Image 1 (spheres, rainbow, N blue to C red):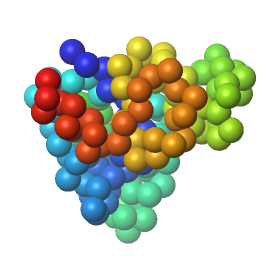
Image 2 (spheres, rainbow, N blue to C red; image 1 turned 135 degrees about the horizontal axis):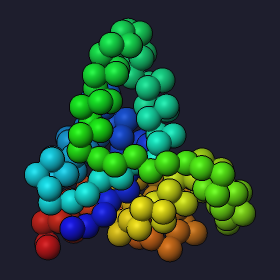
Image 3 (cartoon, one colour; image 1 turned 180 degrees about the vertical axis):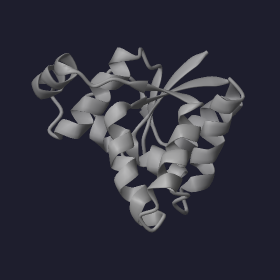
Image 4 (tube, rainbow, N blue to C red; image 1 turned 45 degrees about the vertical axis):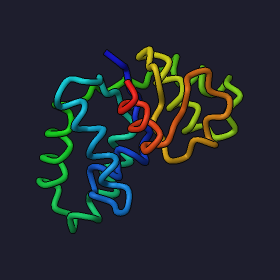
Length: 141
């Protein structure tokens, strides 16, 4: 089963129903729901998503918690620890957050990173594709 690491932006696209990106993100999540792929998300991405979701749901924390908990049923959170931080700081990534995402993707042995900001992952040894590219690859296989 393909291990797919979702960047924060794609996670938020799905959880906040952010248009015009929601549909592709929803299809990717659907693949995980149907056990066609295994989804991974860095634990820190949930904090960023929570911030956006609180605004999206008018600060109704009960909805935010419910949305995130439901999503957690279809993915695995990759823990950020000291080693992750140290590796990200030592990496070639100019953006610390992107470095942490990349190290998290390596930790879960991701086959691919799905992000709308693929240019942020130019130093990645793991292929990084946009959601529409990932879906095209899935249709071929």
